[in-house]
Image 1 (spheres, one colour):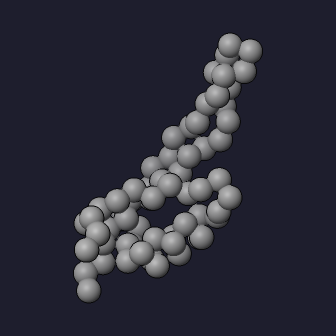
Image 2 (cartoon, one colour; image 1 turned 180 degrees about the vertical axis):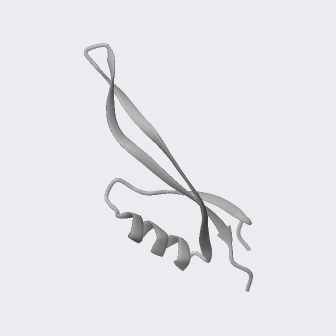
Length: 62
């Protein structure tokens, strides 16, 4: 049996719907969402790269 609660990150090459479907296939339901900016360094300056989206998955009881 898996963990009761786990964070799933939306991968760069998948849509939000695909991430939610992947969660469902693993027996989890989305119960929360958080986003945070991802930066990288360009010419010594932090530069916005993309938005990281994560869903909190709750294990569905059998």
